[in-house]
Image 1 (spheres, rainbow, N blue to C red):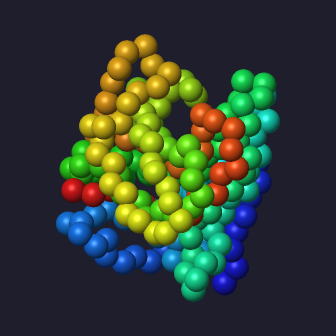
Image 2: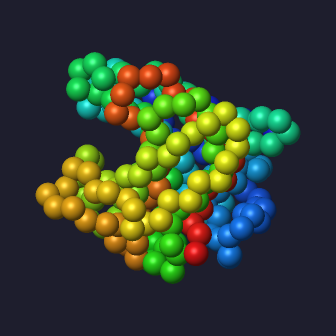
Image 3: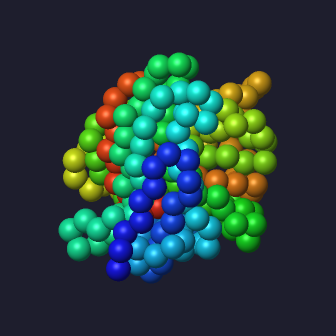
Amino acid sequence: MRSFWLRGFAAVALAAGSFPLHGASDPLLLDDFSSGGAQALIGTRWEAFTDRVMGGRSDMAAGVAPMDGEYVLRMTGAVSLENNGGFIQVRLPLPDSRRTEAASFTGVFLEVRGAPGSYYIHLRDNRTRAPWAYYRQRIDVRDDWQTVRLPFDAFESAGMLRSLTPNVDRLQSVAIVAAGEAFDADIMVRSIGLYR
């Protein structure tokens, strides 16, 4: 099997298969990248964006790649604050069949490792219509694999007129983002989903 890579703005792709999340009761696995295939477990495709869509200067490469005998989603790049920029991201849209299902879960989990930096999970729902509106929660990344759990009620809103928490019964996408400071990003994700 081959890995898929993209640079800049195109859509990424990738996975199938599943394994149990240790310590979680009946999780909803969104992707585990195990097949290195063309789409996520839930049927949608990963998309990649940088601040270049609005004139920024950040660069990235992202895709599913083999690592230690398994496939992982890897995003690398140089986050630049020049020209009002400052982000790179990979985002997974949720299909209509999964959007209301999120309401029965407590939060987002991911198995992650990478170089230290300013990383976030971003969520979008039916109220985040503007491109700069989302909910975020910072994730600490270290060199060894760890499972991070991020409860929905701990996400903070950004780019919105008032402070809101995610409308989880109308969740539209989940994104892995490097943002907010100039640094060389390198983050790997082995699985991502929702936990109860």
